[in-house]
Length: 411
Image 1 (cartoon, one colour):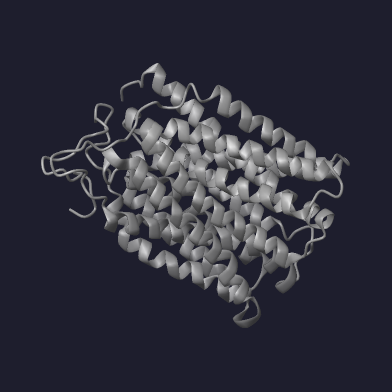
Image 2: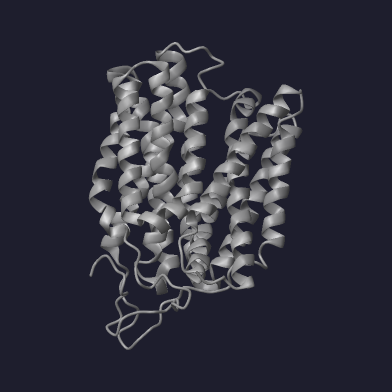
């Protein structure tokens, strides 16, 4: 295995830092919501609407990242998206520091944060695929491991600041500083390459729409699982299984731990067993996990089930962006931006649909919904096979003579 050039190593470190800043900031924001809920005098419905707003504006942010990437490259798109997050975090801190600040400022701050969130999701994946192509092997799992590890640190930072009586603005301010540092210092390390399709006599080759829908559905299924467990695992353990309040968060903790371990193991596993087998194994394990939650209404079984459910999220998300980026390497930025939109559909589906099923048939049985969405993923596993183009020497604009990408699922 050849050693990547120093520039590729630097780009990998910069993109990893962007993923870490994203994970840390998001965890700080969502775990601070209960504090802001009390300060702003909003109820659970209001919190749900704010979460929905973030999902909607995140989709807008992903589209903006696509436009910026086509115009100036994904390096610029990622820096701009991080700047949106910094602006939003500063505004959120101000709402905590200035008593009586209008509620619309607080809501607007979360809307802006959603734009930055979606932009970093999309542009970060674009950058990750570009750097991965220079490495000639799978490294996307490492990026998402950095995200998950930083998210755990962010959640602990909020819990720690609350426990010792510090204001919640401390971790929020730290998140803004981290995002600012990555935007300013990391921008020089982001990959400057642009995945722009060449224009021939017939214009640009059409995007591989079937492939976008296929991999988009896989991402939707993964984020439905993620949203379902993140939103409802603690509620299910505490309210329906009558688990002690101190133990109820263990379901989510086990889930996040499983995601982190899976993401650390994904790249080596792909190198040894191939993407298809890793996808199959991850989907089957998570199916079993959701089934445990649905069919065995006991705290130990539920916590174990939530942990197993995290395996799909840990492996499928990075592998889906990798496979989507290989559909048409010359237009990977556009493809990734479109596939990323399915992320937010899954987030809303997992949070809202399970909530609607909470009373009847019950939250436990409701976890059969994300399980059902994982079943078709088993049928898509062979589409994840690594294309020949994933080599250090493969040019970004490599297309066939007819203008179609050689790795397209539509072939």
